[in-house]
Image (cartoon, rainbow, N blue to C red):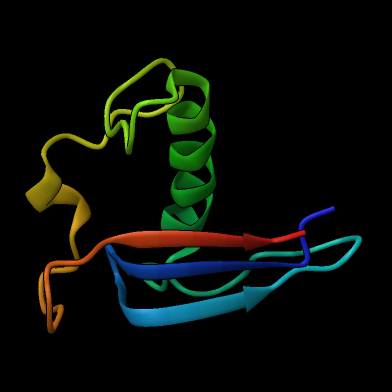
Length: 86
């Protein structure tokens, strides 16, 4: 089971954001707060793991576009990273 998901500078997530997950996790909120971006981050990890050659922005599970489309527009640096705690 995934216990937490860490996102850095992906779409609306500026800087490092850690989201705790439990046995049942409900994503809720108004438009534009990151519900879809959270799920896209997980899909991006999955399709990149399948490929095995770095971060794959465009594939069978997800089409992000170019790296500038994935990077948070007001990020302090250009590092994009993800992490899982199992």
